[in-house]
Length: 187
Image (tube, rainbow, N blue to C red):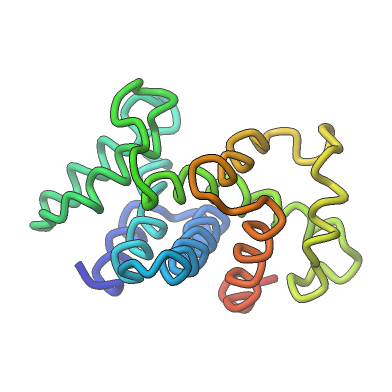
């Protein structure tokens, strides 16, 4: 699957612009992580772009999240098991199936929540611009549990154990990736 096809699939099932921006953020970070690990940027990017693509249709039935996207991908003729498995692993917490097992799947698991934290840090800054956010500004909010309370910090911190990337480096990598697409994110 090419990015344009993945983008069309995402847009046909997701209308909320903020949810779309979240998917763009995760795509950018996944591409950066693919470069970090010397992996296929296109595959990793597609996984990031589509990981929440069925959310609007499954938000009231979390066990169906990722299952629908997998079905839609197969209907388009997608057979790449790396893409299909990584997307399924994204909803492991609700399905109890498909636990993350490789760098692709753990990268998605760790960076998904981090993109939300970075956006939250951006939005409390006076300029509301990603280019004013630093690793230090994200780390200053890290221990403030009331700030972006829905962000599962323990999930992000798994980057150290599962990916071998120190937390501050992981934040730097994600922040830089998001800053590179700041216009697409409106930040």
